[in-house]
Length: 128
Image 1: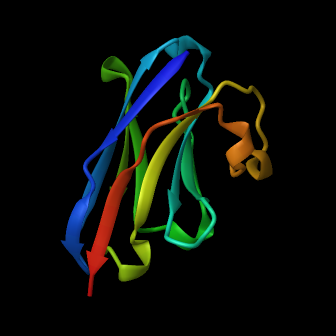
Image 2 (image 1 turned 120 degrees about the vertical axis):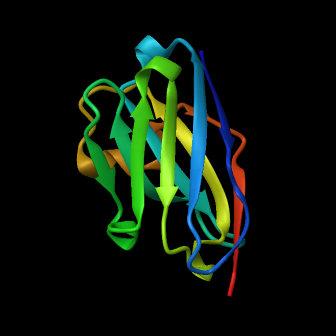
């Protein structure tokens, strides 16, 4: 089992920056990819990016490239999502998720169904 706890969300103004954190615990040795997703009211959960747990390669959705940065701290078992130049359209509940599947292709790692563990989410609200 893997446990995930997100933090760092809040109410911010357009143009601000936020760093979301995801504390990872439990059977971390089984993780291959950590993903960040977001879900706005009335919309489907959307992949924003991911990081390979062991080698640190990062992957981003085209819609967030250049503004979102994912990193990890292996010593602390934590993953981070840095969001710069926040826009009202970034308002959503942000989730981190863990996948224990190996060899995920780019198409696959964007899929909600490939992640077996999820946090409770942290709300980001951006005012204009």
